[in-house]
Length: 458
Ligand SMILES: Cc1cc2nc3c(=O)[nH]c(=O)nc-3n(C[C@H](O)[C@H](O)[C@H](O)COP(=O)(O)O)c2cc1C
Image (cartoon, rainbow, N blue to C red; front, side):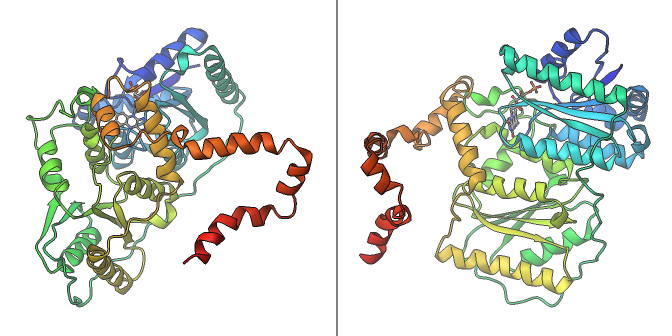
């Protein structure tokens, strides 16, 4: 059986993920795992139709496809995303239709589920028979039990393909919005109080998004800087080289305008709005490249204290995965999240939501409000904290310094009062009479007693 590997790593063969593929190739000598370096050759695939067609032909003749990729910012690398867009733009879907597929990633398992959900949805949209996902941690291959787990997954995959077993479809086709947004008369603008408003937009060819951006820009009193992603000087996607890990110096530092833009415009703005149109199941590949390139600041919150919101043109209500990505991005950036406005409703509703966004930004300037963190950022921050404290301290030296300086190494072990109380109670409830009392009908009362005391004292 030929299982064609679509490699999503910008590092091509020098990829961690491809070592997992090489492992499979050794363990399953009766099958072949030819690799196409999609993310690394993105420019060629974009500019040379023959090269793109050759990849499509290889998909057509393969028995199955393995979407194998590193995690990049909740998803896949921007170049891989672009390849997925090209499949639609160039009408190559038929090569994928009915083909068995599985996804394999390596990462530190930070939002690996959203990346696999995305690939699963892409496979469903291409009418592939998506078998399942395998999310490996970068170093899992050193662990015999993890090797065995990967082998079992692959054996099952091969058996399913050989038997022509049915697969469940997790995503239904998206229903496009298909509604034209026509802004109504402007409302009185919201007072920015001299704060800097920056709107970064990728509205190429999307009239609704351009109109939403214009409406929002006019909804503030002060000057608003609007930057189109197409005009940003971005020479290429993140290379995954991690040279930034020592002191946040990007390999592109003086070769293009991205890091200067991020430092001088984004980091100095008070209100940041990111605007994009849905392309397949995410925003554009250009937006993805933007997020990938912000990695030069590694795992630290880079929009701390800013008000952040998104304008989205397209069927976001059908894309819970994308909504989760945007919301957790805002949380993990420690930004005050003002929400997402889309063009899914009537024009008047969109107008009202855009005006309200500007008004909320003005209100919260006087009384800042940062929503409490949810599981998304609590879990994400703990994962980063543990990785940077241990295995990733090298090479991510800049991160380590930041985490130390900003108290992000907030290990729970330091809560000595809680630990002592737990040890004390752990042993105390071994006494039957105490246990009867503690775990008896009065337990709910005991649980709220300290809170009640606090409220009563007010
Ligand atoms: C720009 C960038 C973004 C990343 N984003 C994520 C992420 O969102 N979640 C995660 O778990 N790992 C993330 N990683 C880590 C990579 O997924 C991980 O190192 C992977 O094993 C690299 O595989 P490769 O060598 O095949 O490219 C990121 C790495 C880079 C360079």
